[in-house]
View: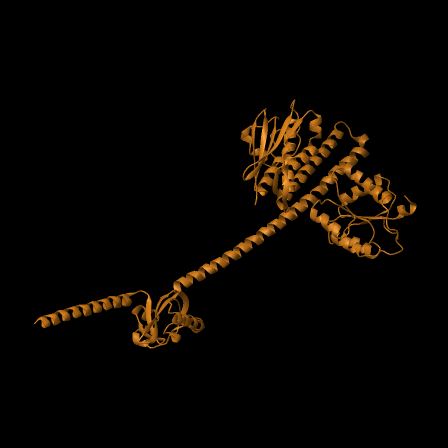
Length: 144
Length: 392
């Protein structure tokens, strides 16, 4: 893991305060060094994407919930894929929904991965560990 | 004398003939005059005779008001073109016109739908025809009413269909929130129980840890129930894709997937090797076979020498899948209960599960228009039957 990669932020789009806290704890438990930038709903996420420029470090990963107030996760996905900074950033959909319709929509609009949030917190921690290892260590991102 | 006699006889016979003719004519005239339908004779397209029913139907009051009028004055203007065509066919072919529906204009100017039969003849070298017509106003009203009711019914069906579609959409939304919204709080309960257990371990006294463990177990149970509900609702919502399926292959694959532990524990599963094909949904039939075998494994694995037999019987019009075990069985008075969702005949400690497996089989049977039933003797095992009709 290069230092450069570790400075790059992970963007977490999550509206539910409990899920947000548990996700942050799960990642903190793995001593992940990447800063985590949080958008608390779809609108915040879209604002964040639209105001991104060269002065910000290139994000390493987006964790995106689908069911969000105001602007849905799919809309956020479309907005990210249409933005020059975000068009090639790995986007992992992290949601409670295991509906096939949602899975299809997510991939149709360019998600790289789809993960159903486990209810069991032990599995949740495992999941965080796997996301970190895969996207930060195993996966080779497009460098910008 | 003889001649006179002869002439006398001649006169008698002529008079007899005339009397017969007059009588015959009177008979026919009576028939015409008393017929409940309108009868008109047209010579050279003009009315030469019309019976009283015809006069009254056309509201002419007396024959003089209508005699001499042409057929084109009687017909409704929109009907004239069609009538001309019929008339020329009739006169050229000397063939009658069998009941046709058309419209007349009565003498008072009102419209009258009629059914007409016409027959051509030659009268003194002029083209003539007779027309028999009846007033079909009532019939037309009834037909119109039927049409109106039908279109009303169609509108009702459309409305109901829309309501059903709406209900389906609501069910979809409901399932969506079941999968999404009901799970979020569960994740909170489980997550914070776990954090409490780890970060405040030294402060938990006595049964504290046990309580937290129980909370987490209850969460897992609740989570399973939600998952099961989702599975059931997907059976209703997902469209089936039909293909020719090798049932024996599905059985073999299912056994390979499920039975490892059972076989290692000394269990035996007998299956037949003959290939039986059926046009059905792979997803549906796999789910049925999987749940029946799972059920058999669950309720026989505690026996000393558990044996499960799976066979597929091909009949003339259907295929029967039979799954037989020598497990604990059940009392036949609970036959219907075992196919009801979340109904269980045993305590969860003895046989874990939410009680959804056979409910899935039943629901799938309903959707696939198949039948599922069981036979059992407590203590000596159960046999489950799943029958599907062969489709063309």
